[in-house]
Length: 293
Ligand code: G1P
Image (cartoon, rainbow, N blue to C red):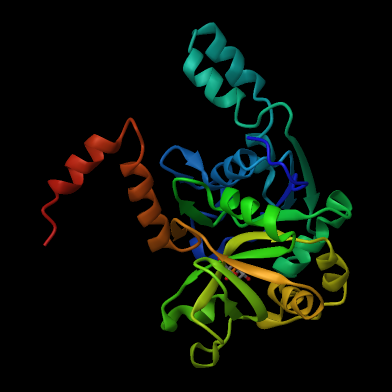
Protein backbone atom coordinates (compact mmCIF):
# COMPACT_ATOMS: atom_id res chain seq x y z
CA UNK A 1 0.00 0.00 0.00
CA UNK A 2 1.14 3.57 -0.71
CA UNK A 3 0.15 6.33 1.65
CA UNK A 4 -0.47 9.69 0.06
CA UNK A 5 1.08 11.81 2.74
CA UNK A 6 4.74 12.17 3.56
CA UNK A 7 4.83 9.54 6.30
CA UNK A 8 7.49 7.16 5.03
CA UNK A 9 9.62 6.33 8.10
CA UNK A 10 8.93 4.04 11.05
CA UNK A 11 11.13 3.69 14.11
CA UNK A 12 11.23 0.40 16.04
CA UNK A 13 12.81 0.69 19.50
CA UNK A 14 14.13 -2.85 20.04
CA UNK A 15 17.01 -2.32 22.46
CA UNK A 16 15.11 -3.33 25.63
CA UNK A 17 16.44 -6.24 27.67
CA UNK A 18 13.14 -8.11 27.98
CA UNK A 19 13.53 -8.71 31.71
CA UNK A 20 9.81 -9.43 32.10
CA UNK A 21 10.29 -12.46 29.87
CA UNK A 22 13.30 -14.15 31.43
CA UNK A 23 14.56 -16.83 31.01
CA UNK A 24 13.23 -16.87 27.41
CA UNK A 25 15.03 -13.60 26.68
CA UNK A 26 18.38 -14.47 28.28
CA UNK A 27 20.10 -14.98 24.92
CA UNK A 28 17.38 -14.09 22.38
CA UNK A 29 15.70 -10.73 21.85
CA UNK A 30 12.12 -10.55 23.10
CA UNK A 31 11.16 -9.10 19.71
CA UNK A 32 12.10 -12.45 18.15
CA UNK A 33 9.65 -14.44 20.28
CA UNK A 34 7.10 -15.92 17.88
CA UNK A 35 3.35 -15.55 17.95
CA UNK A 36 2.25 -18.68 16.05
CA UNK A 37 4.77 -18.60 13.18
CA UNK A 38 6.26 -15.11 13.02
CA UNK A 39 8.40 -13.14 15.47
CA UNK A 40 6.82 -10.11 17.13
CA UNK A 41 9.04 -7.74 15.19
CA UNK A 42 7.86 -9.16 11.86
CA UNK A 43 4.24 -8.33 12.69
CA UNK A 44 5.33 -4.79 13.55
CA UNK A 45 7.31 -4.44 10.32
CA UNK A 46 4.43 -5.81 8.23
CA UNK A 47 2.06 -3.32 9.83
CA UNK A 48 4.42 -0.49 8.88
CA UNK A 49 4.98 -1.68 5.32
CA UNK A 50 1.25 -2.21 4.78
CA UNK A 51 0.69 1.36 5.95
CA UNK A 52 2.95 2.75 3.22
CA UNK A 53 6.17 3.08 5.25
CA UNK A 54 9.33 2.73 3.13
CA UNK A 55 12.16 3.23 5.63
CA UNK A 56 12.47 1.09 8.74
CA UNK A 57 14.75 2.40 11.49
CA UNK A 58 15.59 -0.15 14.17
CA UNK A 59 17.09 1.13 17.41
CA UNK A 60 19.00 -1.90 18.58
CA UNK A 61 21.20 -2.89 21.48
CA UNK A 62 23.27 -5.79 22.77
CA UNK A 63 22.30 -9.32 21.67
CA UNK A 64 19.97 -8.08 18.94
CA UNK A 65 21.78 -9.28 15.81
CA UNK A 66 19.15 -11.96 15.16
CA UNK A 67 16.71 -9.13 14.33
CA UNK A 68 19.07 -7.87 11.60
CA UNK A 69 19.59 -11.41 10.36
CA UNK A 70 15.85 -12.01 10.20
CA UNK A 71 15.40 -9.15 7.73
CA UNK A 72 18.53 -9.99 5.71
CA UNK A 73 18.96 -12.44 2.87
CA UNK A 74 19.55 -15.98 4.22
CA UNK A 75 21.72 -17.56 1.50
CA UNK A 76 22.10 -21.02 3.02
CA UNK A 77 18.40 -21.60 3.72
CA UNK A 78 17.45 -20.14 0.35
CA UNK A 79 19.76 -22.44 -1.59
CA UNK A 80 18.57 -25.48 0.42
CA UNK A 81 14.95 -24.62 -0.29
CA UNK A 82 15.74 -24.08 -4.00
CA UNK A 83 17.41 -27.49 -4.23
CA UNK A 84 14.39 -29.11 -2.56
CA UNK A 85 11.98 -27.09 -4.71
CA UNK A 86 10.16 -25.77 -1.61
CA UNK A 87 8.67 -22.76 -3.39
CA UNK A 88 6.19 -21.74 -0.70
CA UNK A 89 8.80 -21.59 2.07
CA UNK A 90 11.27 -19.86 -0.24
CA UNK A 91 8.78 -17.13 -1.04
CA UNK A 92 7.93 -16.85 2.65
CA UNK A 93 11.48 -16.00 3.66
CA UNK A 94 12.41 -13.94 0.58
CA UNK A 95 9.54 -11.50 0.73
CA UNK A 96 9.39 -10.44 4.35
CA UNK A 97 10.47 -6.97 3.33
CA UNK A 98 9.65 -5.78 -0.21
CA UNK A 99 12.61 -4.51 -2.25
CA UNK A 100 11.50 -0.84 -2.18
CA UNK A 101 11.68 -0.85 1.64
CA UNK A 102 15.02 -0.06 3.29
CA UNK A 103 16.30 -0.96 6.77
CA UNK A 104 18.56 1.18 8.91
CA UNK A 105 20.03 -0.10 12.18
CA UNK A 106 21.19 2.31 14.87
CA UNK A 107 22.72 1.16 18.10
CA UNK A 108 21.45 2.60 21.38
CA UNK A 109 24.54 2.24 23.52
CA UNK A 110 22.86 2.69 26.86
CA UNK A 111 19.33 1.72 27.93
CA UNK A 112 18.26 5.24 28.90
CA UNK A 113 14.56 4.90 28.06
CA UNK A 114 12.07 5.04 25.20
CA UNK A 115 12.57 8.77 24.70
CA UNK A 116 16.30 8.28 24.35
CA UNK A 117 15.74 5.38 21.91
CA UNK A 118 13.56 7.59 19.72
CA UNK A 119 16.15 10.38 19.88
CA UNK A 120 18.75 7.91 18.54
CA UNK A 121 16.68 7.81 15.31
CA UNK A 122 17.15 11.53 14.65
CA UNK A 123 20.05 11.18 12.14
CA UNK A 124 17.94 8.77 10.05
CA UNK A 125 14.63 10.61 10.34
CA UNK A 126 15.75 14.24 9.95
CA UNK A 127 12.99 16.79 9.55
CA UNK A 128 10.25 14.31 8.61
CA UNK A 129 7.23 13.04 10.45
CA UNK A 130 7.64 9.42 11.50
CA UNK A 131 5.85 6.52 13.13
CA UNK A 132 7.03 4.70 16.26
CA UNK A 133 5.93 1.11 16.71
CA UNK A 134 6.47 -0.87 19.90
CA UNK A 135 6.51 -4.50 18.78
CA UNK A 136 5.31 -5.66 22.23
CA UNK A 137 1.90 -4.20 21.52
CA UNK A 138 0.10 -6.35 18.97
CA UNK A 139 -3.21 -5.17 17.61
CA UNK A 140 -5.62 -7.51 15.89
CA UNK A 141 -7.92 -5.55 13.58
CA UNK A 142 -9.41 -5.56 10.10
CA UNK A 143 -7.45 -2.41 9.19
CA UNK A 144 -4.13 -2.14 10.99
CA UNK A 145 -3.82 0.39 13.79
CA UNK A 146 -1.05 2.30 12.00
CA UNK A 147 -3.09 2.47 8.75
CA UNK A 148 -5.99 3.93 10.72
CA UNK A 149 -3.63 6.50 12.23
CA UNK A 150 -2.06 7.33 8.86
CA UNK A 151 -5.56 8.26 7.66
CA UNK A 152 -6.04 10.56 10.63
CA UNK A 153 -2.59 12.06 10.04
CA UNK A 154 -3.60 13.01 6.48
CA UNK A 155 -6.38 15.14 7.96
CA UNK A 156 -4.74 16.45 11.11
CA UNK A 157 -1.05 16.79 10.13
CA UNK A 158 -0.11 16.69 13.83
CA UNK A 159 1.39 14.15 16.21
CA UNK A 160 -1.09 11.36 16.99
CA UNK A 161 -0.84 8.81 19.77
CA UNK A 162 -2.80 5.54 19.91
CA UNK A 163 -4.85 5.09 23.08
CA UNK A 164 -7.32 2.68 24.57
CA UNK A 165 -9.42 2.51 27.72
CA UNK A 166 -7.50 0.86 30.58
CA UNK A 167 -8.83 -0.51 33.86
CA UNK A 168 -8.05 1.92 36.68
CA UNK A 169 -5.90 -0.61 38.57
CA UNK A 170 -3.51 -0.83 35.60
CA UNK A 171 -3.15 2.85 34.71
CA UNK A 172 0.20 3.08 36.54
CA UNK A 173 1.75 0.91 33.80
CA UNK A 174 0.88 3.36 31.00
CA UNK A 175 1.27 6.82 29.60
CA UNK A 176 -2.13 8.41 30.35
CA UNK A 177 -3.68 11.27 28.39
CA UNK A 178 -5.71 14.32 29.36
CA UNK A 179 -7.75 16.25 26.83
CA UNK A 180 -11.05 16.70 25.06
CA UNK A 181 -12.69 13.99 23.03
CA UNK A 182 -14.20 15.73 20.05
CA UNK A 183 -15.63 12.86 18.04
CA UNK A 184 -15.97 9.08 18.23
CA UNK A 185 -12.20 8.41 18.20
CA UNK A 186 -10.15 11.65 18.29
CA UNK A 187 -8.91 13.48 21.36
CA UNK A 188 -7.20 16.87 21.37
CA UNK A 189 -4.64 16.61 24.14
CA UNK A 190 -3.97 19.05 26.94
CA UNK A 191 -1.48 16.83 28.79
CA UNK A 192 0.00 13.35 29.05
CA UNK A 193 1.74 11.71 32.03
CA UNK A 194 3.92 8.61 32.21
CA UNK A 195 2.96 5.92 34.70
CA UNK A 196 0.86 8.01 37.12
CA UNK A 197 -0.54 6.62 40.37
CA UNK A 198 -3.84 4.96 39.56
CA UNK A 199 -5.68 7.52 41.67
CA UNK A 200 -3.94 10.54 40.13
CA UNK A 201 -4.28 9.54 36.46
CA UNK A 202 -5.89 12.34 34.42
CA UNK A 203 -8.18 9.90 32.53
CA UNK A 204 -8.63 6.20 31.94
CA UNK A 205 -7.12 6.36 28.45
CA UNK A 206 -3.72 4.65 28.24
CA UNK A 207 -1.10 5.02 25.52
CA UNK A 208 -0.55 1.98 23.31
CA UNK A 209 2.67 1.49 21.32
CA UNK A 210 1.78 3.31 18.09
CA UNK A 211 2.73 6.93 17.59
CA UNK A 212 2.95 9.29 14.64
CA UNK A 213 5.25 12.13 15.62
CA UNK A 214 6.17 15.47 14.11
CA UNK A 215 9.96 15.95 14.02
CA UNK A 216 9.80 18.84 16.51
CA UNK A 217 9.90 16.02 19.09
CA UNK A 218 13.68 15.62 18.55
CA UNK A 219 14.67 19.07 19.87
CA UNK A 220 12.36 18.51 22.80
CA UNK A 221 13.86 15.07 23.52
CA UNK A 222 17.35 16.58 23.52
CA UNK A 223 16.25 18.69 26.47
CA UNK A 224 14.07 16.13 28.27
CA UNK A 225 15.32 15.10 31.69
CA UNK A 226 14.94 11.70 33.30
CA UNK A 227 11.37 10.98 34.34
CA UNK A 228 9.46 7.92 35.59
CA UNK A 229 11.78 5.01 36.43
CA UNK A 230 14.83 7.28 36.00
CA UNK A 231 14.47 7.01 32.20
CA UNK A 232 14.14 9.61 29.46
CA UNK A 233 10.47 9.20 28.65
CA UNK A 234 8.88 9.79 25.26
CA UNK A 235 5.69 10.69 27.12
CA UNK A 236 7.41 13.63 28.86
CA UNK A 237 8.63 14.97 25.51
CA UNK A 238 5.12 14.63 24.09
CA UNK A 239 3.81 16.62 27.08
CA UNK A 240 6.13 19.47 26.05
CA UNK A 241 5.08 19.11 22.41
CA UNK A 242 1.43 19.46 23.54
CA UNK A 243 2.32 22.81 25.12
CA UNK A 244 3.75 24.04 21.78
CA UNK A 245 1.50 22.57 19.09
CA UNK A 246 -1.63 20.48 18.56
CA UNK A 247 -1.24 16.82 19.49
CA UNK A 248 -4.02 14.27 19.16
CA UNK A 249 -4.81 10.84 20.55
CA UNK A 250 -6.68 8.27 18.54
CA UNK A 251 -8.87 5.46 19.92
CA UNK A 252 -8.06 2.76 17.41
CA UNK A 253 -10.37 0.00 16.30
CA UNK A 254 -8.99 -3.41 17.22
CA UNK A 255 -7.98 -5.69 20.04
CA UNK A 256 -4.64 -5.04 21.65
CA UNK A 257 -2.39 -7.63 23.30
CA UNK A 258 0.43 -6.64 25.62
CA UNK A 259 2.98 -9.22 24.53
CA UNK A 260 5.53 -7.76 26.92
CA UNK A 261 3.95 -9.86 29.64
CA UNK A 262 3.39 -13.60 29.76
CA UNK A 263 -0.40 -13.60 29.97
CA UNK A 264 -0.76 -11.09 27.13
CA UNK A 265 1.63 -13.15 25.05
CA UNK A 266 -0.42 -16.32 25.64
CA UNK A 267 -3.68 -14.53 24.79
CA UNK A 268 -2.15 -13.27 21.53
CA UNK A 269 -0.89 -16.76 20.70
CA UNK A 270 -4.38 -18.18 21.13
CA UNK A 271 -6.20 -15.46 19.21
CA UNK A 272 -3.70 -15.26 16.35
CA UNK A 273 -3.85 -19.06 16.22
CA UNK A 274 -7.63 -18.92 16.01
CA UNK A 275 -7.26 -16.44 13.13
CA UNK A 276 -4.58 -18.44 11.31
CA UNK A 277 -5.96 -20.01 8.16
CA UNK A 278 -4.13 -23.33 8.52
CA UNK A 279 -4.58 -23.73 12.28
CA UNK A 280 -7.90 -22.12 13.08
CA UNK A 281 -10.16 -25.15 12.86
CA UNK A 282 -7.91 -27.62 14.67
CA UNK A 283 -7.08 -25.14 17.43
CA UNK A 284 -10.76 -24.31 17.91
CA UNK A 285 -11.56 -28.05 18.20
CA UNK A 286 -8.70 -28.55 20.61
CA UNK A 287 -9.84 -25.70 22.89
CA UNK A 288 -13.45 -26.93 22.82
CA UNK A 289 -12.31 -30.40 23.86
CA UNK A 290 -10.32 -29.14 26.80
CA UNK A 291 -13.57 -29.00 28.79
CA UNK A 292 -12.24 -26.24 31.01
CA UNK A 293 -14.34 -25.77 34.14
C1 G1P B 1 5.76 2.35 27.08
C2 G1P B 1 5.40 3.84 27.17
C3 G1P B 1 4.02 4.00 27.81
C4 G1P B 1 3.00 3.21 27.01
C5 G1P B 1 3.43 1.75 26.88
C6 G1P B 1 2.51 1.00 25.93
O1 G1P B 1 5.88 1.86 28.39
O2 G1P B 1 6.39 4.50 27.93
O3 G1P B 1 3.67 5.36 27.82
O4 G1P B 1 1.73 3.31 27.65
O5 G1P B 1 4.77 1.64 26.36
O6 G1P B 1 2.87 -0.34 25.80
P1 G1P B 1 6.57 0.41 28.76
O7 G1P B 1 5.49 -0.61 28.56
O8 G1P B 1 7.72 0.24 27.82
O9 G1P B 1 6.99 0.54 30.18
